Amino acid sequence: MDSAKRRFGVSIDQVTRILVALDLRRGNIVDAFADLERGRARAFVDMLGAVTGARGRDSALVEQIYTLSDQIRCQRIINAAPGHGNTEGVSQVETLMSDREHLILELRVCDPEMADVLSISSADLASVQAALGPSDQLLYALPAETPQDSIRFLDIRAETSRIVDCNCKAPVLCTTF
Image (tube, rainbow, N blue to C red; front, top):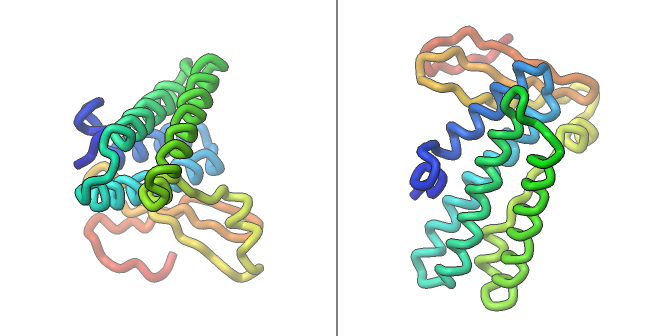
C-alpha cells in the first residue's frame, strides 16, 4: 500500500514526477537526478517494507518511519515549489531526516533486517558520472504523467548530462536518438 497516497492524496510516483518537473523547469539536472534516485530508492524500500512488514515485524516503529518518510516527501515538494524554498523548509527536511535516521537505528537493534529494508540508498549525479567511461552512456527514464506522454530520458555521460525526448507517444522500444 502506498502510504503517501493514503496520507497526502498523492503517490510516490506523483511526488517524484512533480519534483523532477520542478527541477527541470529550473534547469537543474543535478537535483532532478537526485529526486529520481530518491524516488526510485523510496519506491523500492516501500515495496520491500510492505512484503517484510507482513511477516509480523515491529509495525509501530515501522509505521513511525513511514510517517516521517511521508512528511519528508511532502516538505520537499513544498520546498521545491516556486517561492517556497527557504532555509526553514530545508532545516525542517534535515530535522525530519535526522529523526527518521534515529528511528532506523532504534529498529536496527531489534530488527536489523527490517532496518536494512527501510534504509534509503541513492547515488548522486557526480558519482555516477565519475563511474562512467569516456564512451559510456546511462539513460535514466523520466516519469511521465500519462502513458500518452512522450518518453523522455536523462542522458548521463562522464562529462555531460541532458534531457533526451524520444518523441514516442506509445510504449515502443526506442533504440536511437
